[in-house]
Image 1 (cartoon, rainbow, N blue to C red):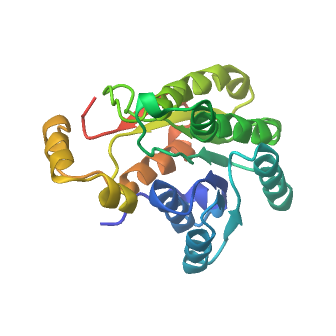
Image 2: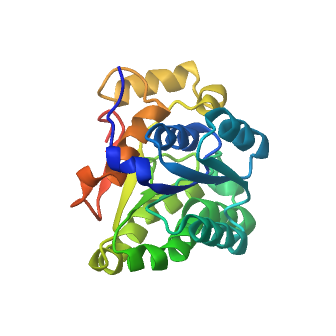
Amino acid sequence: MAGAVYRELGAARVFITGGATGIGAAMVAAFAGQGAAVDFIDRDRAAGEALARGLGGRVRFHAGDVTDTEALQGTIAGVIAAGGGLDVLVANAADDRRHAAAEVTPALWAERLAVNVGHAFFAVQAAMGPMMAAGRGSVILFGSISWRVKMAEMPAYTTAKAAVHGLTRSLVVPLGRAGVRINTIAPGWVMTDRQRADYFTPAAAARLAQDQILPGLIAPADVADLALFLASDGARMVTGQEITVDGGWT
């Protein structure tokens, strides 16, 4: 069954971080399917180039590491200059590789916070001026339910993701007074290819079946559908919210 069509997104200019694989790739495809001009950045050059080539149209891939703040902000500035503005910013890039608390070094801590929450702030910082000047737009940041369900296997990640909605709330007023909306999506356990390959063991599947209320597995497209809505005029009065896609787990 075809998903919702948001006609206004056909004219949208969209920038997505971490768009080469997983949830990010699903969002790139979903916005492209609406007819939007989509630019996305990722450090996985092979996957990013393949995705852009496969989608064609107005999809452009930019190779880069989102923790390189100067390069990230330069890429966003270039996209805005080339496209004459930006309507939707999605800060999706993340690193949820598991790590025990006893093994965390200062370098790992700093790196995981940089990718999981730091890059989101600097992406918004680069885009907010032009979006506010235009008087409209949607910013979508990505949190996680991991800290709410007390996951112990990745403390740097869960700490960063707990901070994301604080970042969203800190920007609601300045952005909103200028007509720009900002919200957080908090996914549950989304079955990307990497999650299936690395972490979806029989024991994990049993835990998920117990904790997630709705039957079935969450697909990247389920999250992308919410991102489309938050970017659309249908969400014109929605801002400062954290919206979960977790099948009722939390």
